Image (spheres, rainbow, N blue to C red):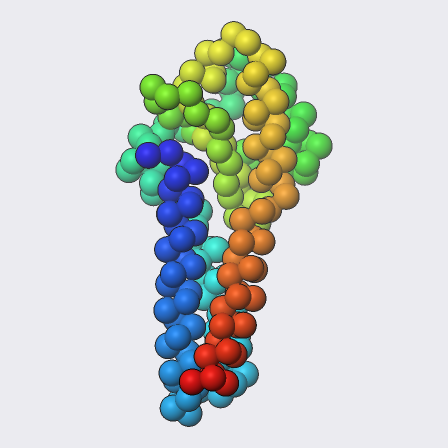
Length: 177
């Protein structure tokens, strides 16, 4: 199981759970147990909660399924100074601090994967083969791409989209049921 697959499963489960909670909020709204204002805020609340839990889920899955080991940046600097220079340059350029590297032993050629919470506490998961890779022209651009993806905070947009869809479905269900 790869980190990107774990992320996709988590996003799918959050969407399904969000839709179930939306249906529950419509039921409570129809019964008069909650007001409309509260019903509109609930999807935002649970999607923020799902977003905050995501790094914890990925940390747990790193240890449980991926058997990742964290590598100190000083270790990387000894073995691969070009990678360390690339990481420092990209982190400075993107204003990302305190990066942590996790190395995963895998037989398959996997791309790096990054995650974190709102640009804080970034983690990059690298396959062990990438640390030993002699061809730097392949390694450095893929790591730069992952750090750029992390800095753009794409995952937050997913949860924002979930919130908008859930509020829309909530209003449709409330008015047509």
